[in-house]
Image (cartoon, rainbow, N blue to C red; front, side, top):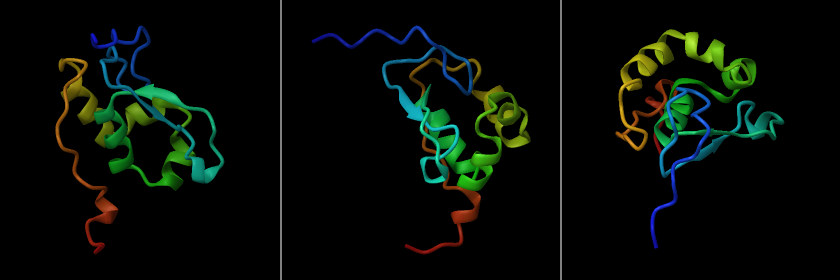
Length: 102
């Protein structure tokens, strides 16, 4: 069976075309009452959750322009801009979780 074609809609965060793998992100976290989802690249999804806590996403998450303007995400978005749709690398854990132990 052939791979499904890439989605026609762009990634909600980086605005690049979506590839074969698409994840659904809750701009307002489910734990904070969010129900709506948006399509994102897996790498963009992991970067959002590695950068922001659920409380921060609740405050900023429904406005992608505010997220894109955040210094940490602006650097990521500049770096990812020229990468292919299915580009992926390992994402570091959220900064606040680095001190935690399993």
